[in-house]
Length: 46
Ligand SMILES: [Zn+2]
Image (cartoon, rainbow, N blue to C red):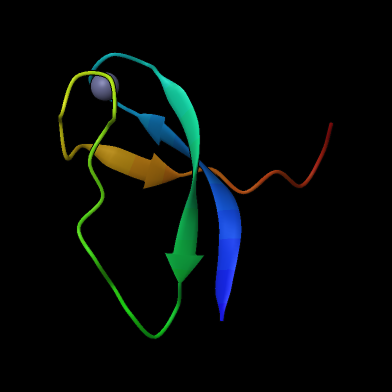
């Protein structure tokens, strides 16, 4: 089951949403700069 989560690129600072599957760890890359230095940023507070 995929969940859409927020991710942030540590290289260029670009924020984006992508589907995240817990049981299917796949390499995520920034759609802007192509870096794989991407971290999940779960939005707990607004
Ligand atoms: Zn980037």
